[in-house]
Length: 107
Image (cartoon, rainbow, N blue to C red; front, side, top):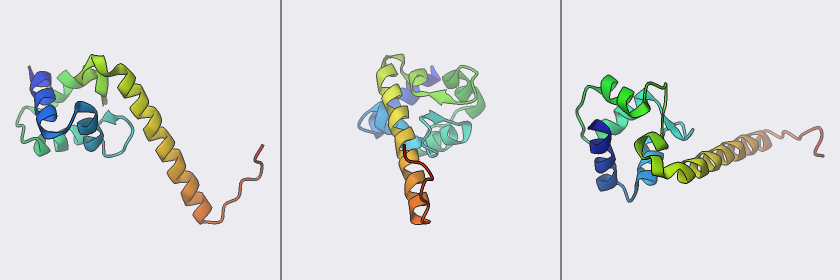
């Protein structure tokens, strides 16, 4: 029951589930931690037993994945994780370049 309420609230608050998921994913790893989940529930003005609700969403895992919210979003979840990983790599490269870092070998 909780997962369907959470999904419905996400659809009302955001343009789509993917946008909502990205907004709640503070560390940009494509998953929601318990703390990200709790912050998201507060944003959505949802009041549940947070531990039980997160356990239901994440199916007992340490982090919830987009496909836990909607299994039909498998391709979107994979694309999101790939895009977030690339953005993280780009930020790391930019930070190193800003410090004058030059790789020893480029080939």
